[in-house]
Amino acid sequence: MKLSTPWLALLCGALAAQAWAAEPESCRKIRFADIGWTDIAATTGLASAVLQGLGYQPSTQLASEPIAFTGLKNQQIDVYLGYWVPSQTPAITPFLQAKALQVLPEPNLSGAKYTLAVPNQLAEQGLRTFADIARFRKQLDGKIYGIESGSQGNAIIKRMIANNDFGLKGFTLVESSESGMLAAVSRAIRQKRMVVFLAWEPHPMNYLMRLSYLAGGDQAFGAEYGGSKVYTVVANGFMQRCPNAGKLISQLRFSLDMENQVMNAILKRIPPARAARQWLQANPQPLERWLDGVSSFDGKPGLPAVQAYLRQGEGNGP
Image (cartoon, rainbow, N blue to C red; front, side, top):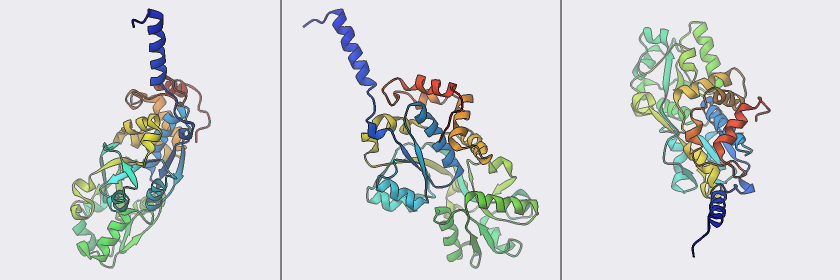
């Protein structure tokens, strides 16, 4: 049967409407995990700002690594944007072996690093490698500063101490939050005391402090100063249940510079979603890639919806 022009127009319109089909109501609320690291707050803020522009209702739950992975397993959390490889691999491996969650195949960030560091003045005095730490035991007061309890970075340091790797037997790991660790390191630098601490990039510490990453820790943190990639983890079935939100999540790609800038704003006590929104208002270039083929929650083209959202006033972000 040959269709007339009006019928063809109607058919094309129906197909277009189907292509921009609205997401199920159960997908409106997208739940993120944040383990208390500023880089994850930044990327979660960026994703949340875009989802808000699309008409979703994102929320963030602060949790330790084990609780975040358990939440994904139990489908109490939908998305985690901060799986650092290789440092968090031991924590997530049991969940992967049980097929309890899904890691998306492409990293959302490359070029990251995660290992021990010292202030530059300490490196200038000769503490440049992991093997040098023990020689400065007295000046360091036998302490290595880590982050929150339960993190894989702390677990690696504890393992080095227990195994007497690099002569570290007898050292004490000081566990704290990211902000608490950075405050302690900043005090030590101001007071010209020696300190060894867990550091990583992306993070504003890389330009707010004059620091040196320690060489020789490949067996502990991996090659290239704990060279890392960051992956996205989703709850099983999320990509199928919420394909439109899932498409956005799968297309998110961040850069070191992007994250450093958003993180710097967060450290100035700007809420993550607002910091992210302000960054996107000034730097909208990533949106076209992130929103390729993505619709708003009510089924309209996604890019214009987010652009209109960003043109609005500050509003009340999460």
